[in-house]
Amino acid sequence: MMPPELKDFMERRSRQVERSLRGLLDGKQRPKRLAEAMSYSLFAGGKRLRPILVMAGAECCGLEGRKALKAACALEMIHTYSLIHDDLPAMDDDDLRRGKPTNHKVFGEALAILAGDGLLTYAFETAAANARDLGLDGRATAELIACIARGAGALGMVGGQACDLEAENWRAKKGRGFNPRRTLEDIHLRKTAALMAASLEAGAILARGSSSQRRRLAEFGRKSGLAFQIADDVLDVVGDKKKLGKSGSDEQNDKLTYARLYGVERARRLADRLAAEAGELLAPFGRKARALRLLADYMIKRDK
Amino acid sequence: MMPPELKDFMERRSRQVERSLRGLLDGKQRPKRLAEAMSYSLFAGGKRLRPILVMAGAECCGLEGRKALKAACALEMIHTYSLIHDDLPAMDDDDLRRGKPTNHKVFGEALAILAGDGLLTYAFETAAANARDLGLDGRATAELIACIARGAGALGMVGGQACDLEAENWRAKKGRGFNPRRTLEDIHLRKTAALMAASLEAGAILARGSSSQRRRLAEFGRKSGLAFQIADDVLDVVGDKKKLGKSGSDEQNDKLTYARLYGVERARRLADRLAAEAGELLAPFGRKARALRLLADYMIKRDK
Image (cartoon, rainbow over the protein chains, first blue to last red):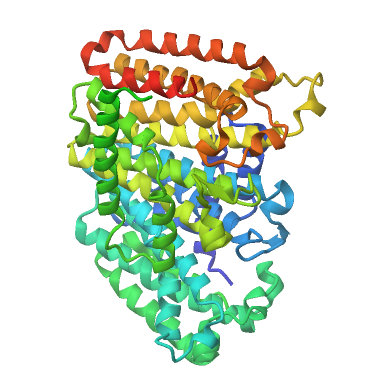
């Protein structure tokens, strides 16, 4: 169960993000079907975790969360594009996402690819607009773009997807210079943790946080992102699969997972240790990090 | 035949872009195959037209072209990603590009999608780095990102691809509120001209050009981009197809083209008129626009 304080916080934030995303997508001269495809996945019921992290990162450094709303939406656009592309037949080939038909099932593969490309591109414009609205200087604006690009790109999330592809048939590769544990950590750090770290750091940059604040929040994002992913692996094995609206394809694919490599109990302990280390990083932020602490705690423990 | 002055200029610029791209792609901790897939298409022998436009736009506004090299490379990354995604089986399904196997033929579809995503993402980081290197203020930095995103995204190039998909089977749609000529202009303005306009404007922004200079260069880009696309349509019909390394799929698909809607002669005249209008826009730049004039002239007339 989610604590009521966190529930209130998440609902309020989700509504803000929802409204802001609608405003950002409305009334532009985009081709009709493309706009529909972009909106379809953007409003398919995500938890808005990354945008909430952007705003939480901003609050840790003393900026009101809603002043980071555009960048928050930018991170949600990036997360959404990555789901659209991941679900494609050439990638994970998923028909369902959060219990609804995936983008390419509704709009066709070509439009799904373009909807993803469009969201990724628009994300950078939207983040830059946030920096401009707040009057950030050139250096901070460039750092905001670089931080998001590194988290999302070939060094981060896109790189994680590529590592994931390379790790397929990992059993066959074992022993031939292939270290499954190191590979798995690398995959998850890139695939999930990098964008979560970038979300928090983006918030800190918008809030003109110090470089030590930025580093702490990014590191918190990496550690709790990894813990989150390990918890997700465990959930995939022991949890009610329907609750996530997934078809349990990880297990069918004989995919490299923490639950498989470490066993459920050790994987859980690993997640807990990472979560504790992450929590310590927030100490200097005091009360300002309250929402972030609750959120991280819930994210990682949601399977218990 | 390319005039010798233009040839020298293009070769020098291409070499600069090539070297700069190598530097930008080297030595980063990207997963190996992903890095190979990104490089494969980036160094597949493109003409480097968009980067040359970025540098030409900068020179028109008084900034040495090579000071805009990173943004120039960013635009080439965006162009390259668009080719990788366009060639995918779900899109144009092309096996060859510039006479070489397309990205997905060499690396598989999944990695080709990711290589495109990675290039698009890195482009924004690279453009932002250029702004930072030149000490641009926050507003100009945000405008640079917005200008590139609009040219590349759902309002621009990605939107053009989507319009193109919608226009398939245009013969069946004729008369039912579907205007093939307007649709075709819209497709090409978005698909080709928007990114060329953004390239020139990006150069102008880096050079701290006035808003009137920026508008003129963007409009020049739109007009000459459209003219270029019409010339390309004509070339597809009358030219030696092998020269372009394409398989002539436009004609096989019964695609909406200028040559088909207007006939070769009228399409040529239309391209010439647009080119002349574009040329007039450069008058206030005087000598500084010399390379750009030669380039536009050659681009549009290359089939004659």
